[in-house]
Amino acid sequence: MKVVAIAGVGLIGASFGLALRRAGFTGEILGVSSERSIEAARRVGAIDYGITIEDAARRADLIFLSRPIFGIIETLAHLGPIARKGTLITDAGSTKVTIETAARESLQHATFVGGHPMAGKEARGAEAADAALFEGRPWIFTSEPAHPVFPEFREWIRRIGAREKLLDAATHDRMVAWASHLPQLASTALAAVLAHENPEAAAVAGPGLIDMTRLAMSSWDLWSDILGTNGPEVSAALDAYIAKLESLRSELDRNFEDGAKFARALRNRE
Amino acid sequence: MKVVAIAGVGLIGASFGLALRRAGFTGEILGVSSERSIEAARRVGAIDYGITIEDAARRADLIFLSRPIFGIIETLAHLGPIARKGTLITDAGSTKVTIETAARESLQHATFVGGHPMAGKEARGAEAADAALFEGRPWIFTSEPAHPVFPEFREWIRRIGAREKLLDAATHDRMVAWASHLPQLASTALAAVLAHENPEAAAVAGPGLIDMTRLAMSSWDLWSDILGTNGPEVSAALDAYIAKLESLRSELDRNFEDGAKFARALRNRE
Image 1 (cartoon, one colour):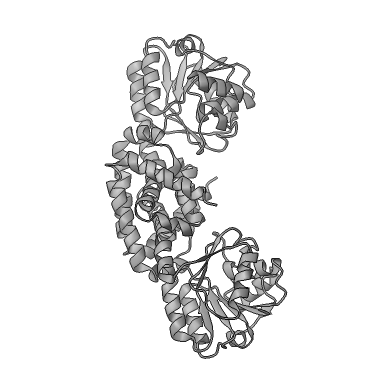
Image 2 (image 1 turned 45 degrees about the horizontal axis):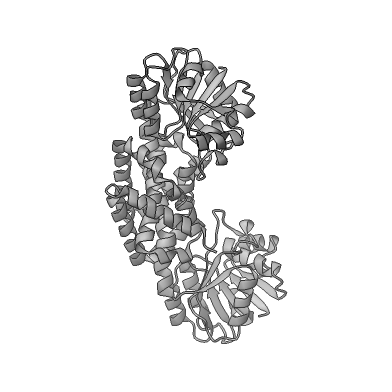
């Protein structure tokens, strides 16, 4: 693995470049993005320079797609006929079934492995990039392809401090519907109901409401793709949450205790 | 204000003692609690020594009730015939209408002012006490009684760094139903629905779920009193939240944007 191309050098893409560099990667790290993003990523040291997606298809051993989901799907269609057999393509999309299907249908020569680094922060763009963003965080692969670049890529994932995990795409999408998309909607709905029905309650807001509305600051640009590609799973989780809220009054003590146990266990995992 | 008695020297009571001391209060700070709690509060320097509630009624200029809500009501009943005219009684209860009614019905000579320091953390007990707990946090008074101790007490609230705020008890209870009790239930329900229906999703949990389930670790001991004394307001907020979640699918983009705006504004208040 000598040449890595990162398509989409926002927070995740640029952090991946920085993390690779810090972990000792000495090959080339190239960016595919708008001129402005390339300049920002170059300035923070996340990439060496910008190239076109066609050049990336010709030269890269690994192409890392870190754009919003429908952007990844578009890039896969573009790479379909031109990406070489020797190139491994991976991604950082937050849902995996739709992307994996698109890769299977698009790529004629190259191999794809779905990926999901479960890391992030509110700030966006290369300016917010952080070489330590993936440290201690799960990095999910949806398969273990028998491609010569894969073992080396996986080794770099370990070196940048991420905790590698194998989950097939459908299981991944169901799990993130509960662990990530549902919390997002719970936070958005909480902030929205306060905004629409009782904004003056902000005057007595404490750290609890601050925590509970952090996710609500997420941008709709990103989330429209995520929710749009995981609809049925998210709907099922949302229905279960609504049912739980409706039944909360009748068994409040048991829900408090079971919820507390779950929340504590979540923090005590290695 | 020479003698302060703190009835209930858990996190809030002991932090109040520490904060007073650090702000330069040189009078006596006495604790009313179980032997074990008194010992813990004395050890961290939050109180000078323990006394009985009868002694507190005889000697204190200010009695600060920082027990769970129904404990405060019980103590008010106890203090009713014995607390002197010169004593100002205040509290730290999370709901105010029920407590204020109890004070009005119980106290024969002393004056009561409802209080709510909006501060806290997960850890409990005097061991977790923190002189800086109230810094920058709202401290709500439900009235401004014409009692000689009140101006001085209020001055100490400012000196310990809290932001004093006047809100009548009913308005307070409605506002905290939205800004505090609803977020608590949203967090509890989220943790409980994961616990009961998809605990294995914890394997892909990120910082979002961690934030969203912090409140769920709160103890039922405290919350049964809070929810039990603010039922109708909490129910109304919960109903509105459920309705918002149900309608979320149809206007997801608008709710995302309005929620994000509210969440950002919450962080930009002075």
